[in-house]
Image (cartoon, rainbow over all chains, first blue to last red; front, side):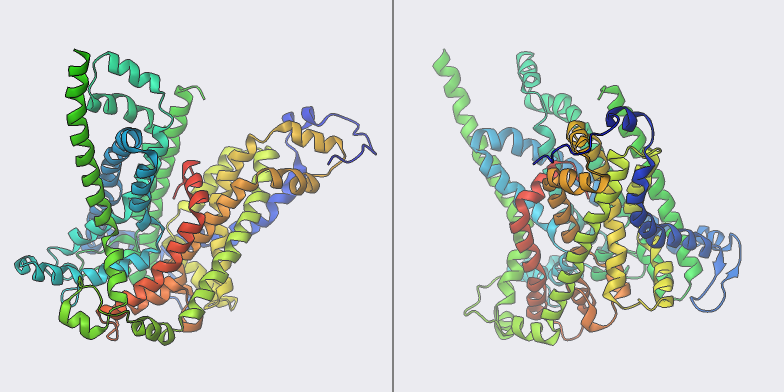
Length: 315
Length: 284
């Protein structure tokens, strides 16, 4: 309901707001600015500051310059945590993206068209379910299934006569990282499927018809047209899942606590150990700062590629 | 000729269709298998588990494991803590996101791109880079081991994402609506609450849903900040019990089921909003 015009506005707003920055809006930013300063900006700067000190968390931090970073470079645990994280990225970003592309294409192109969209969406929901659960809870589920003595997997293998294949899945350094990787593929798969199925809806069917006339097979059509058209979704999925992999903590905490030894140690858990178990806040901050720097660079590259792509497509 | 081609196409078509369906069903069942195994063993007596293993159907519905676990960890309290924290964060973060996005998207603040970069990064930052100073500061101001600390922190983290998303949405807000309201003499506050918020309600409800579920599922910061039993959230309570000597197969299943049920309920209740949100390009 429009209010009656009691007080005609002296000038049209359009010209004023389009050209000049309107400082009346600054007031709306104030609560947000205060909150972000207190929770994000100040702690982040403090963390960088602490990384140049030796500090147990109490007393006065002692300035030691780049010593913590120097120590990082010579710390095998640090390098191993990054080696492990590259495997986790494979399991959380690369494999789910590839599998997700294939599954989304089958579901969208084949199941939805020949069998029915409802069937396709049932499969999609089933694959997506692990994504909605708290990671700590999925960790508990798998921690139990993979448990060497009372776990379901070994017990099932035993019962079907494959007891020889039973392993200490999370406790044996040879299998721990592979087991974690398998769990992560399971956890992550639904996300790319949902994203790519949404993206495929944008593909112009005429492109497909043209390809059919040219005699392109299903696979050719898929790689040449569909993958090309949903490139934005592929970027988003790859970048968000890679960043999620770099930050992985909950699953590692619940499944292996970085062990056995350092077989599944990841940077975030390594930082946590230094902060809260070894009371070495300076060193923990240095690890966290390196991790942050990597994520900032990745985000920046992603935004650049994304904006360049949008400009090329003229939108 | 025509008949021959359709016949030739028809049969392999049906064959592939069933192959594809069987393949997808097996895969989806594999993905869902852990949940089925958990549900099966959460309602099984320990003696029966010992005798028949994890795949046997329970002879009778045994709920003692679930009930015992519920009372042992005071699960009702954990549910309430999780709900209180997630709901407060979701409301607070939506409000802050709207205020920020109103200034950046509709007010067309200078340096919009820098703001957006900042908010995106604030949301993507590893929490490890904030945790120690936050831990230290919260101890200084007496907020350590309080739900308020967790609420404030997550309101900021979720609002960072909300601001990033909403600013782009508000940028495309129909200018005529704003101008019409301004012609009627409405101030900026009135325009926000009477025009912008009602018009963008669907987007705001998607954001609310996401913030609620994301906060519910958080583990790392609540693990650090909520150390006393009566303040812990569901994931933290379950996570720290892992490896406890009291946890045998059926108790673990019972605890996992208690963690799964609320999340699946949210999933079913919010599925429409959630799918729409994911499709809108809101990502995590």
